[in-house]
Length: 93
Image (cartoon, rainbow, N blue to C red; front, side, top):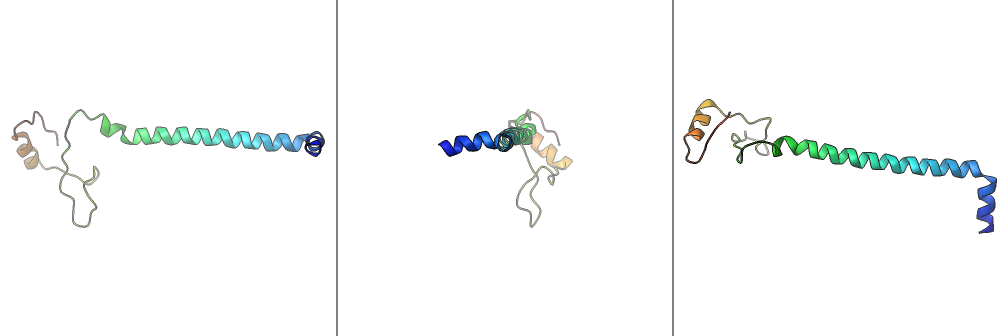
């Protein structure tokens, strides 16, 4: 304990520098976790705020993993067919 206290008195600047670096890294990690949480929320907020209770995608092309917003295109004929379905109040292609 005596050696540690003597080192703290002798090299005060070094310990302050190391302590400030640790504090800055802690603040950086806090900022990054907040940024990550916000970006994750923004990533899905557009889909969550859609007014409809159902979404219709076109069938995926051969070799695609599945339906996606970017690759899906519903034709006017498909839209008309969906609007004639019982229980559907509105359809927007």
